[in-house]
Image 1 (cartoon, rainbow, N blue to C red):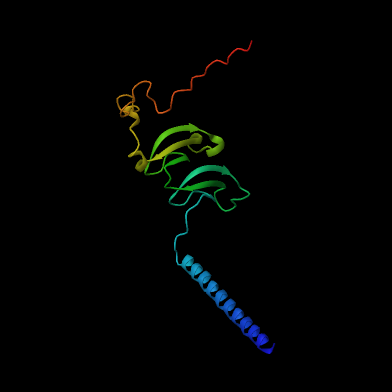
Image 2 (cartoon, rainbow, N blue to C red; image 1 turned 135 degrees about the vertical axis):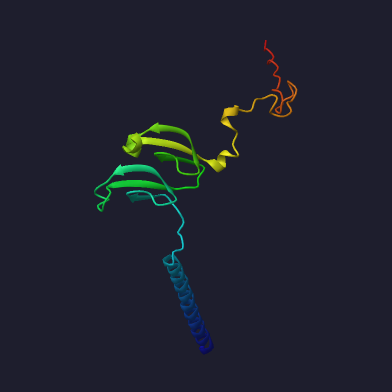
Length: 168
């Protein structure tokens, strides 16, 4: 009985020591992350709202007047989306690296800047791999590859049904 109590006591001390080591390791890791964030390491970009104008690397996708939120300086609250996606719907003109593929006026979304202009923007990198809209679409045939002979499609023909015999 005494050996069992002694073994349980040792096991308890090992658990406590292991717990202290794990907590210390987690503390060190969290401090390292805080220090690297303070050193200027860039945080991942995400959609955000800010007062005034969007920071560098972001496009404005919404704009409203919010003097109750934006107390210092410009009372305009803007929604900012990080650049890099293939398609963007932005207030005003398209950012650098994007081509305009459409536009409309939506003052309720973008306010009075540029008359409420909302531009549909496509990444120029994506545009290089897309077909040229001025050339028209692919026509089938002859541009669609080999065609099966009529009646020789991929699906089997429908089953033939016999009429039920009439009962007399």
